[in-house]
Amino acid sequence: MTAPIPRDIPDLPAVPRPPLLLPSPVPATAVVAPVRRPVVALFRLLTALAAAAGVALEVLLGAPARTLSYFSVQANILLAIVMLMSASRAWRARRPLPSGVTGATLLYVVIAAVVYHLLLAHTTPPFSMTGATTVPQRWHGSWATLQILHTLTPVAALLDWLLLTPAARLHLRQTATWLLYPLVYLVFCLSRPAFFTPSNPARYLYPFLDVAAHGYRSTLANALLLGLAIYALAVLLVAVDHTRPTPVRRRV
Image (tube, rainbow, N blue to C red; front, side, top):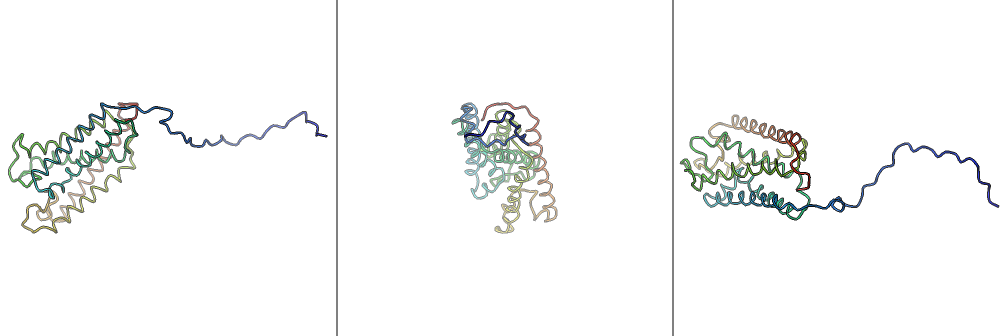
């Protein structure tokens, strides 16, 4: 015989907290279809081609080993690679590159432009990445290359960030990581003169890092001020990124 069914069923104990939701194995792209962005892809492709053209022209005008040692040249090589990859992802509706990579690239090309226009554009003797001792004439190859690497491509990178990239993707915790490359580059600049004779004018790439002219104390002070400026610019980019309006709502 079966036991009698009780008339009063006791209440079930209350759940102490909401049940934890397990992560869904279904990707977001299966719910929201990705969208191709051909205009964005075209702009980024043109930016990559401009950066690559500036680097190639600079290498043709000067010694490749010296030309490739400059910060702005290396930053534009990185910009060309990042923009080319971003153009491909925008064309094929893929996920964008990590914000840490794109933010670092933006920071490097912008700081290269700021340093050139504030500290190098009007120096005596004139600044040149090819070893020239005369001021480059307008529309000459050397002048055009300096404008491409220090004006055209940084402005294009800023426009891409402001007009084609969703806001609030950069984070303050990324800024310290972005300083690693400038720090390594500083070590490279200070150790590079050991491989040249004292009479070689190509020993020092930048006048404010010329140990022979300023001594180690002043040179390191200049490097410290420049490092603080780079970090301040990185923080400023993050702050602007979190306060500016989002130009696009879809994945680019």
